Image (cartoon, rainbow, N blue to C red):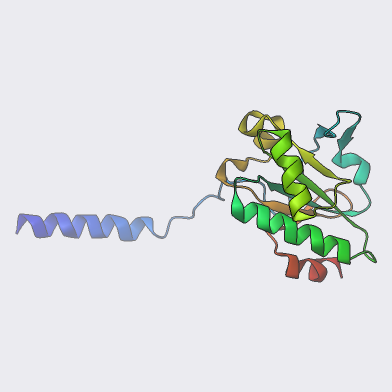
Length: 165
């Protein structure tokens, strides 16, 4: 009889807590947030680029790494989709967190990624970008409007045209 009481108490407590409003998930940024600006150097360290210089256009921001198969495949498919959407004002910024620039260079060659806005952040999880975008929950992508506001998150290549129309 004593075990039945404990089971009843546990069930009662769990049913009461199921109606408590949960906070937003802490992984990454959310739709409606302004994307934090960041500076990143080109692979040859010749110039520094930032998101601010792209304001006025849609920006597809993709975070990935060659060692993460899912993020790598998504990045390649998004890059191909953006190349096909030449009639839209959308630019892709692709940021890899590969620890070695040589791995990054070979990966973008094999995946045929358009390179004008493709960067590598070799500091990985220790980089400022990784922390600003809270990527410890996994790599993601964001579609930003002309003002830098996130209008979509984790989109697939097939979904991209519907956000731009």
